[in-house]
Amino acid sequence: MKGRITRNYCYLNDKVVDMWYVQGIPFTFDELPAPMAIEEIQQEAASNQSYTMEDMYRYSQYLISELCHPLLFTVEDFIENYEEVPE
Image 1 (cartoon, helix red, strand yellow):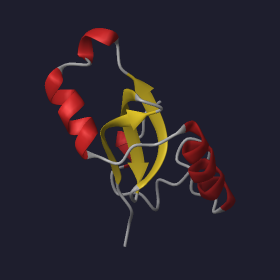
Image 2 (cartoon, helix red, strand yellow):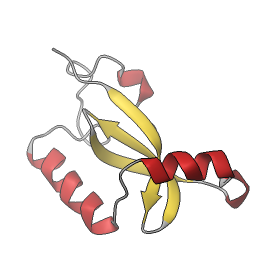
Image 3 (cartoon, helix red, strand yellow):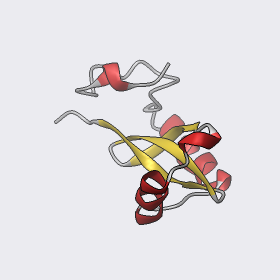
Image 4 (cartoon, helix red, strand yellow):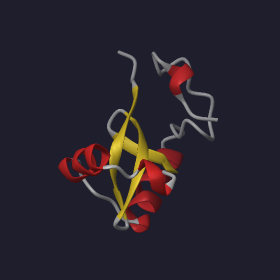
């Protein structure tokens, strides 16, 4: 069974970001420009789990220790939608 890359809006240190996940584990994020922080995005972010930078560090360390961090290792054989990984 292959894993999947997903993404959604959530809060990171009280700021709305576009979070990327591999099998539900966050591995990177994109900050949103201020005009994008519209009400619909804020509502979606509020309905999702929020994170801190410490959380991101711990999740990244876990993915690195398992050699599964999509930005650091070649994992396209294990991810069915690898083309979704941000550059």
